[in-house]
Length: 213
Ligand SMILES: Cc1cc2nc3c(=O)[nH]c(=O)nc-3n(C[C@H](O)[C@H](O)[C@H](O)COP(=O)(O)O)c2cc1C
Image (cartoon, rainbow, N blue to C red; front, side):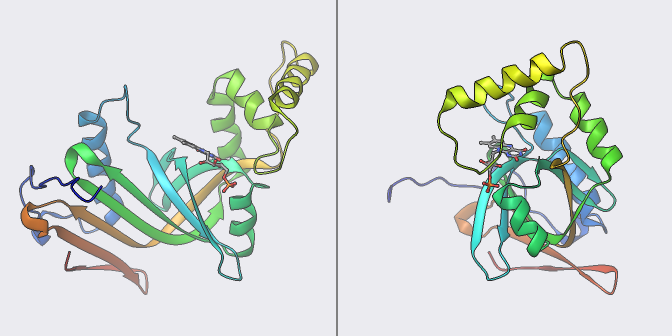
């Protein structure tokens, strides 16, 4: 491991004047560039690591898929009764990190978390393949289960119960929106002299500063 080493700096340095005033606009630009360059065969550019914490400060992280960006923030979908769902209910803050290796970029963000509207979750849930809807509906995410067969039986049972009918959106499944108050953009450069820019929201206004790498 110690000798795994790569020189960054394939892309030009980033200057403060290159950046958008609003980090959501900057994020959309970098995300678009990631979708253009990253290979979908082996990499999903919307993969993000999501960190949450309980009220008492136990921290946990896992990967989720970013499924939407709007002026208010970043949206992902999950089971509200899962471990992350419970942590977000008692401590509605989260941090995310995304890594686009081909572009040598990292984006981090931290913010307050809220549930998206039921109509938003409804629309997204029914846009998914039927098998994914069933999988999400039957899985008691983060709970112990006896074996794989139990899951498959629950899926088959739900399919039988709703044959030729839409799968209802479960009450405990839907989206969360992370409303950022901090957003950081990192661009790899030569000799570990990377570029880092931190946006921070104060009194509703975004300011930004360059950070040492
Ligand atoms: C590539 C990838 C994408 C994933 N996307 C999601 C997702 O969008 N939503 C979700 O709830 N879990 C997703 N997972 C599963 C989570 O990483 C995690 O196992 C699950 O949500 C339970 O986490 P928790 O027990 O901390 O709540 C994904 C896993 C991987 C590897």
